Length: 335
Image 1 (cartoon, one colour):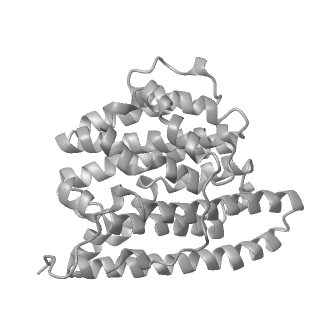
Image 2 (image 1 turned 90 degrees about the vertical axis):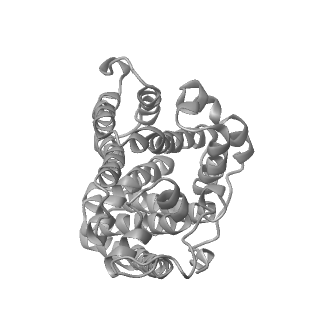
């Protein structure tokens, strides 16, 4: 199966200051000691993270782009640190202890005085990010962002628990939990940040927007699972990968499961476009949203679309994703 056959929603663009980000973006990453505790230089370079940020946020100003890049760096560093330490050692207790301290560095009042002294580069870098992210944001956004970051970190623990128990989750559990462990809710908050807007509360809590968020995350996460199958399952011994999940659940080969996942991803893209073009406008009319609220929502949805197209292009180009699911002849599950 060709993983490049996925339809690309729109044409992606590169932020004009991408070269500056490539040159200077990791000064912060090394300064906070996220590197090299989480990855060696070659492993980090293979991610092509500057391209990810520059393609996902093509119109972000310099300081904003660097900030968003650093959020991505923190998330990838946490993921890689889990692989290198907690997952390699099956250390559930140590992972939980680290994750449980993270809310201390995301105080809702947004001030350094409310934080304890960081004990680890993950804590130090998160504290710095929080103080840079929150000054102009509403209390609701801070709640959402803190919850999203904790869902992401908790998701790493869930993946570790599955590895520890040698358990492959069923598709229903996987799809729900993967949205958090992939960082989808964080991405929505970042879309609001880069757009300098916030989705009106009535819209954000609506069924339609929640469905849009889920579809938006699934499109990216399912693509990720096919593109990085060998690295995750064969090299890192992950059990939380949708290709593996569907192979076991349906009793089919890995290659057949990759086809199933790709079709599901295409269906989710169709659902996303339907929600964006039909359900959201109808919801705005039903709620009788004013002009400012509509402008806020439109700006965030545009940022989500930019991210979706840039992320797709990045996943198809980064060395990190050059290990897709194998072809015919892969072993069978459930027989």
